[in-house]
Image (tube, rainbow, N blue to C red; front, side):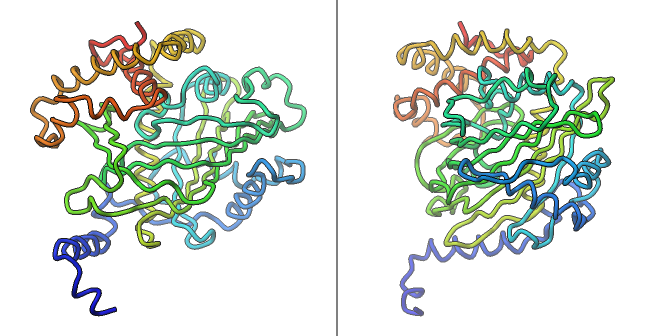
Length: 394
């Protein structure tokens, strides 16, 4: 064992020391502002465990009883600020965190945008999701039902299960992005005259090995590069074979007041990820990731001039109907836009510039759905008034 360590390349040893240094940074140094540490109440944890029983297409859990999660719903209803970093300690065996946000839209509107088969999820969560594709539901369908049409008739809970394929966006620190399958269960129900959606997801096995990505500019520009090459982008760590080993989450969309458009979204998330079977995730990392998601999510859904869901779906359908060559032509225009936009970007070394702009190596490794996801987000940027010159749907 000692001989193997002595014979390691010097670069590998230095990189390992660098990783150890990062793992010993005080928690507060990795987050913007130190949040007060708090534990999720035991009665809420019990009810979260109850919800997790409904995950999996093959799972034949008993009929869902809304009263069984009364404490959980009360917890979400009260958490309208994020002054504390709530987590579950070690109850579920993975690092965890909670995040709450309010959406000033009706539950019907939220469902029309977020769970609309004709609106790609990357256009609603562009800072965290590259691609999210439903593979199949337990009803044998290739798309989720139109949930908003089920709201008028909720005499009993509606439970739908499916399997999704997910690729996330590059991590802000390491640049890595991951692809994995996950089970998802949607439960639409009514409790005390309030309509609620519970969305429960769990990763199926470990993810594909992490691949090198790049965040260009500020994160709210939503400009991400995906190389398809294994490793981390962070200098000194490009050799690391990292994975998301396990993750699961529960999101509750709670119609706080049926008389006005307000939905409180409470998100509980658990993640274990790293390399060599070593977990490097802490609750504050998970919290930061959810905050990253929430910022874009809220901005989009509350944008005053956001087109109606059917109008948005129509423009996205134009992108989906493009031929492969039409998509390539659009992506070439997109890369030209990126080159002009980030002409002075320090992250873009000569190697990166050559890879992206001076040959077709980057565009040649993009699949159809990957090119579409870029154009979906570019089209959304234009609709949000970000003054981007490219109209991806035309």
